[in-house]
Image (cartoon, rainbow, N blue to C red; front, top):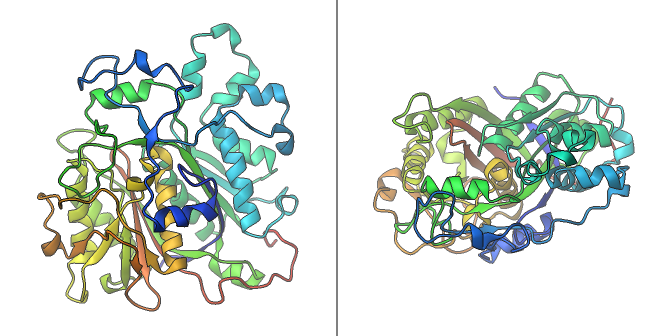
Length: 442
């Protein structure tokens, strides 16, 4: 049986949501935060072409974005202006959202300093380094530490003086949920008293747009139409999210505030498929079942499932089959399982997408409501919703089901690394008064 892991605090910066408090209103109102990437990122006109597959061109620069990402209070984190200028903005963004997550947990950074707290970050983008590659004379020691993927995790351990294991994990689009799984495993094994799990992605270079467009992965119409007949690809997005984790028993003992509970998590691989980037429905279903078994969760306890849900013709039917087969079409379910995806609101954050889905799932449990899935016109005919006993909510609705519901979260990498997490609500009362110094227990 899995060791329950408490989520104590969370922070985020997502398209249309400057912080965690702004995320729920965006979701509940059915807001579409996707627009066009700001013109100052790079000269889009030089790379835009209406014909899909055109070498060196993209059919679209539609994106969920954060707007101006140039600002950063380096002094607040003890970083010199010279070093900050060479840092990948992903590192800056991670520092900001992690500080917010620590504050949300009711902890003081000074109380964490010197503790064996682990840091597990999902990230894969090297956009900032790509932009700088045209000026090799500009590279120095700050550029090297500022742009290595490994430093995404180490920047946090350095600034907050954390002494636990630190890893940057790259499994493409499943990176941040795989990072969360690694953090939960480390906590369950007693290797550290607390951990930070995070994910980050920023869109600063045209190159990934060009490659994904030519690979026919991006939506030429600029929207993630998940589970809809008009699904034609995904929309890229940027942002970051972080959560503070601790074993549930320890959190309750120490009087920590608990937002939600990770009941179980798991990771597997698709194995050999007819194409490296094509999914394996049996592997996905097997993973969901394995995580359910570890958590001791029967299908009837599921109240909602946050799908990876990119809006691609290959991925949506496969994932719908896996969710329905593992959790939907069971005799003990008396109603179809609601399935959704935050990507319809904000786009696909690629390595950080799992963290965005996790935060949505956490809020669904806290608010006991399920937000609408956008861009639903006609159900995808390749998905047999009735037989799978799943449905796509199109308006804000109550979270139905048992008093202690379970919410699933999927995240899949295009190389075949799959991740799944099951969340449960916080033990009542959600916010308990702390009597000890704000920080991890010794």
